Length: 459
Image (cartoon, rainbow, N blue to C red):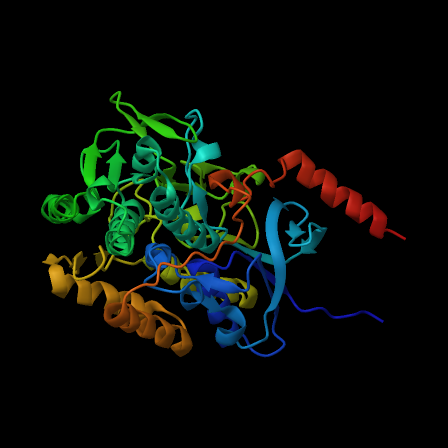
């Protein structure tokens, strides 16, 4: 007797793109029409734009980690792990679970939304001594680390050590770096009032970027406005500069300056997940080349989107233009991909992804912000209202919205207690310890893993 099996849809990644895709699939698929499986190491969707506010203590970590089990309709099976390779020919995804078990997950349709990882360069000491700002654990760890520097500086009788611990370097003048520097500077500015032995003038934040302008996507006027806000707070902004090398106690800039510091935060861009390189498919600057329907040309039932895919930007009408790796595009691509998967499953035509960017928001903490919704340039409180309103509405559950709003109100009224949680206190962790970029397989290893598992399964 033949066993009839439902089509298997495998979604890799629980970022903005993957979660939107899963939610849409659950909503539009008929009961029993297909089995949906999601591969993710964490059963939550991280609201990345608010990570700097977690690092600065304005928000608690839980408030921006939106539970997948609360927001889903419970039909999707969740595999707690990460995809480390895909055999497109065999239609098998190799998954490393959170217990380090390797499993092969077969599929009929696959949606690749593994997101991105922090972009690094071959700079001596970078991965060993820098912190990232890409994961929830990193944001919580950076907060602990910054407060630790204040505690250690306060306890030290060595003027050189005290000065070094009170200098902080952020590399990256994009949204992540600018907001991180702005929010953490506010943290130290407020915290130093609780340290009567520390001279506030010793606290120095450096924001550097190799580009000639901060956040060029905002335009010259708003970018300059943001830079002026940072300078008024005492943040040293250096453009056209990067780092030459880093050690545990100092950072050397490419302009020759040597800054004694124990804190180097690296936010200089992202690259597609290393999973993409296991496919052996064409890429565009490291992102998987797909068509306007987000289908991988020449591969049946393979879709890719978000930070890991070079999705053609049809709204720009320019040859070679691709959508930027932003949450706004990822969320909307997730919905279109879900529709296209269902259309493919039902034998219907697919639709191209077309979306015009609605604007940009940058929260600099307090009442400072710059925003450009629908091309309208805003600064100060109006920009802050737009920025926080956008982030608040983009959160996927009412519980998350309530937590975030409560945190904002409580922080505005009562401030911060500047408490260290102390996790990993005796085991320093840096950029290389959080994103597990060395866990992925080569194409040959993927094929060997799939073939060996298939051989074991044969009678």
